[in-house]
Image (tube, rainbow, N blue to C red; front, side, top):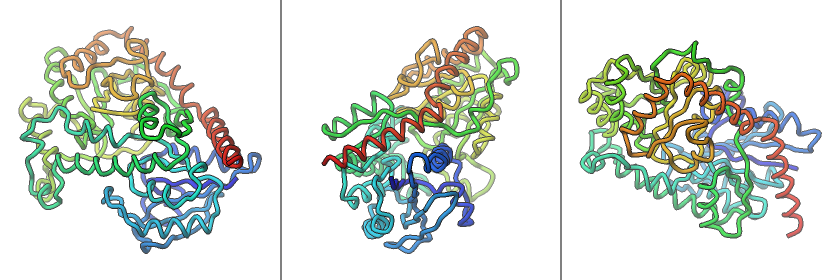
Length: 430
């Protein structure tokens, strides 16, 4: 069986061969691809990986071989995530002709390349799309909790890029239309929550929906959180660089927490959009970054909030192990891997009760929920864990037990092979 993956990023092993920087995102793809290659001989799987690379000439592809995989790089300017470039259709036609896949598996609907591949692959019964986030819901909830005057204002950076908060929301609407069209074409979907299943079936009633959990980055399977070894009264957010992640709501909750726990410390991973160390960084500040700084200054939180910058898998794992509470304050999520990684380590989790997250953990048993726009309830749930060691250890143990099963690499690889086999068998009947 010849399987062609369509990914949003270049896998690290391929990036190393090409001599380009690798991404710490989607690290689980490395483990999954390695597992497929390893079991490929016994299961007769041949794997090729297709990914965007802006140094490739539009309409062409770059081909190579590494670690038992064929790879194809095609041109797409991923920074322009709403731009559907017809040159991708030309490149995909050539790639499909060259590789002759029995099945195409696209990971995610966030970029136009998934729609382009769905259009060019003339076998919808053999087209599989893995749902990650849901662009339609992101568009609907993008501005939640942000005042109108903040949504509509521009910084110099926003004006030059035509990319203020409202315009970012509009871009998600365009991405949602590409997503809808791709799902309407594809004959098969993998998902893992009632939230994504109902969305997919509202678009394509005849689609074959295949339940499949995700395998996470390998670092998070190797260690276990201990209350006695963490830094007390510390909080970690995996990122906070755009409105959907809800950092603004968390900053409204933080003063309530600080009144009860004066020594609270907050660490925020990901891209830092509030830098003030140079004129250049201030000129590049977005309206959302400006709003976050205004909240920090208003509530005198400068000494409380620490921006770690981008963390690789090991650095994030180490940071989580030191953390007392992991918080996911997103306005919408399907099944965030950051929550899964925290659960896998056993870090107590507080999350907004949104989207598919309730399918990941049981409230009061494996984590604590709060209504997405209720800052005081978020603060209350965090303080509960800070002040109750028995609760923290119960949440830790039960969340870890569940996550070990949910994210078991062997089980998930076996499940993926079952899905591939079912799709190709059904395709032969048509």
